[in-house]
Image (cartoon, rainbow, N blue to C red; front, side, top):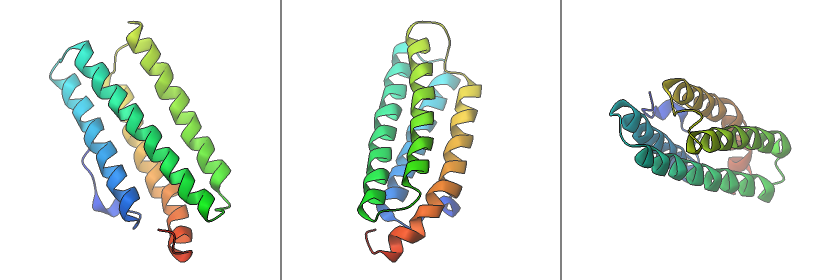
Length: 133
């Protein structure tokens, strides 16, 4: 489910590496679920995914601010919407109100793939053109 496809590269080395790292951590979370690992193990992996995603979003937004990318606010809104949803899942998981399920993983994979292929692919040429990336 979380195998990286090089066709998703946006051509900005640091961003592509971060995307690959996020897919690798999500794959670890998928493996933890598939292998019925402990809630503590899943929590730790989910927390790492959240931290790395937050750092990645901050880095992308910083790059877009550097070049006054006109789509920054819209892109940032996508980041914020996902962040709120994932933090809600995390709170519910910690409180025992839900589990990290295959449906959650499928949502994350679809969101990540579409966001990279559409939203990130849209800003990449702009950054390359301004030679920031």
